[in-house]
Image 1 (cartoon, helix red, strand yellow):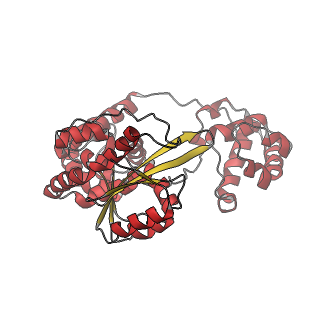
Image 2 (spheres, one colour; image 1 turned 180 degrees about the vertical axis):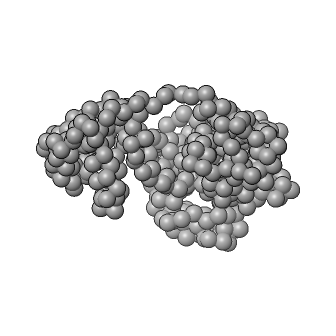
Image 3 (cartoon, one colour; image 1 turned 90 degrees about the horizontal axis):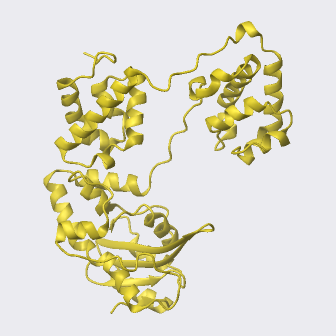
Length: 379
């Protein structure tokens, strides 16, 4: 029967027995509230022995020196929430190489975001339960049944890892799976999208002074990008600023959604600039704007073609569309296409593992079934 290790002596003894293993299988139990997320239990196995660590009672940093070695590998399932908690608790600036079994499964068939219980059944033929999934993990002592449930979460990971890696190797996708796992568990920061006049659907409702104010604000944000980093404005906030045309920093700061640091750093400078731009606006320089359409047949045909490519290419490769080309990635492709990238070269705009996985199949299918003639394909 598993027990919860809660003393430093128990931690060091477990760490000693785990030392030198090539691979570790990990999971966590945590509680989330308005105040944040509290790590409660860490489940850890080297494939032979499994341990449950009381994260509420222990400093786990000594364990991090053992299991966080850069030459080791971590195996998790759906680790996007677990990995940041583990890094912080174990004192690791970066994790070692890792494989997420949920991601691995998504690179071997059409299903993405499957549960661990489902994956264990599909791959190992075992039925497990989730009876304690919503239990209170802060209470102490934890009952035996709850500890057994926690231990089971890592018990099947070694067998899953062996089976999935064998299948990935047969498809020459193991390194792709590792790259995809890291991206899913520690997604990179999204690049800041530069605001332009086209970012504002409702800019057509602005009169000449407010059009001038908006153009001034966009220019100011462009000029001050380094100074304002990492403070940025959402389009709806920027539009609210020019609609209101505040005269004082305090009035600006009251606008909903405005970062406080923006008001503190450049609030009065922005108010003065907006007022000057609005006062100097000449009607002939700012004719009324036309409202952009909510949809066009060209755009609908483009989206339809991209969706057909998404399904067709992913089916050919036997990978999950929701993992490889989720909606945000499709939108990136659509923007790239609109900016002039040829349809058959669109995967080059994606992250390296996606580009490598999709490239040849996408190009071949795009040439075999080119989009309707509105958006021509490069010859």
